[in-house]
Image (tube, rainbow, N blue to C red):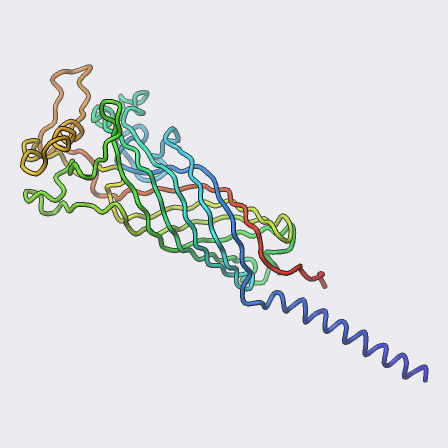
Length: 308
């Protein structure tokens, strides 16, 4: 009798243990866990305008932190088995640049400083991204959701962004795309097409995620946007013959185009001028923008099981 009782009790404990394991694995085997959150952080860009000393270089060497602005957004994320995630997000921000920022290094950035161009462009984007969590994918970390878990990740996807480059003229901001400042759409320049202000982008980057509690996680993420346009700043190639503007534009657009196409600095040299065909930008490299965002997310899921 005593043996039977102990045997039954032992089976009962084993069943409880197996059930606990099953429940524990049930959570981690769930097809998806849902999150929603917001983000905030600095945004900057790499374009033909502004930059740092020298004739203009590629990448971080030409990044001017003085042109940093603030961006923010909201997102939803679905995490699959702690290793992969898909995310949809909307973000808004602004990029800007001006050649006058080179005043302190004008001796080494003579041409860009005297070119004297400037721009700003509001950015609105919709991104669809995939996230990869290598620690859980390769089994060195059990879950991204246990409080205290730190999870690095990589990001890649595609998005659509809207931009609208503007320049300031007589204390007013003027849209630059309708002015065709480099002859876009002019028959005389068949290779210069009118650029669209809504375009495709390829966002890619990396981040680190920290699970504060069962319901809240924080992350810091760097996201670079590869673009397929050189006109984020409305500057790309060479100056055109100013008389052509009269053929295609009229009224305020004509006056603004003549004023904003060529803003070369003459305060120190009244004879300084540019001619059609002179370099205005560098069409060899497209423009890009990027952000470093702090994210906070709320997790929609059942209470985590006890660790076994």
